Image 1 (cartoon, helix red, strand yellow):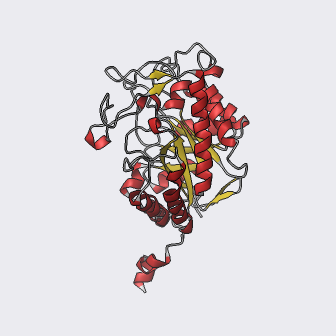
Image 2 (cartoon, rainbow, N blue to C red):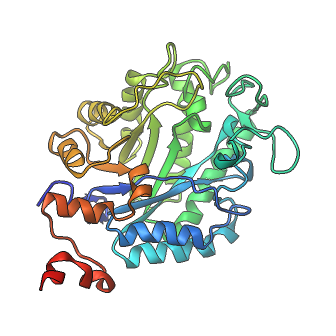
Image 3 (cartoon, one colour):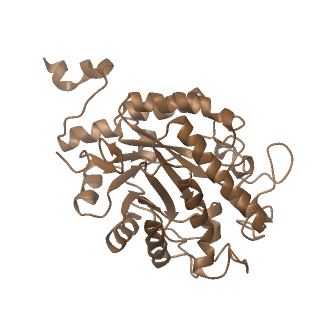
Length: 359
């Protein structure tokens, strides 16, 4: 059996293989509510054979959405449809996870296919917030600088969202601290110019991430995995960097986080990012092997043998598939065929297996 299709156990959760469907926004919700698009989108990836499916960034507050069509988990009414989605994923052999998020200063945007620009006023707009009153890019709305009490309210919002995620049946929670959204904004010196306990030193800038982790842990069972997605570098001089990420990962490990999902970038618009196959894998490799915490590799991983090599070389524990999964919901099934592994197909599809057809 290949490494890619070997099981992986974290706490009381065993993934049938090491393929994770990365959280990818669908911009298809109304008032934060999931609908049949999300059921079919996520459900088809479960049928397609992934071990873990992490639902897209789900906002912990209404103004924490990237766009007005983001999924939300800021109120109890959101849970009912999410239960249906989780049940379908679990019934089809995958584990359901959810990413809890707040967009920070990058909130209040138009849908990507409508240009994706920040909406400054009028319908579907709201005042973004952040660690400092610095917009993501010139011409955008200056975010409201959060007060200490407002930060505490947001920490509570993450806690309440984690409790709703548990009520919905998710088995994995990932805290989104990457891509220039709120938690990343706090730990990067490019976006955080505060002079209080949440700004200045490394320890102060990571304080909010730690506060959120502890708040989530207060309601999330000890036997279920907790992931944190980070941007391992801002790709910009004087910004957050790889060594900072190693230090943060060590702190998160000590606080009981089970896996670091190592992405990068997103906090400044002019970063030069050398995107290409495996370009972010070194971050997962360094964190995993220097700190001794499980990591997920992500970023232009598009082929089965490529994913297998990353695992065989000990650079990561899980492979996060994003855009390739949008192109091919059955990537895991096809990858298994390429690597010579036998995987279970849904009973409804077995008659389409090539060996069955040949008979």
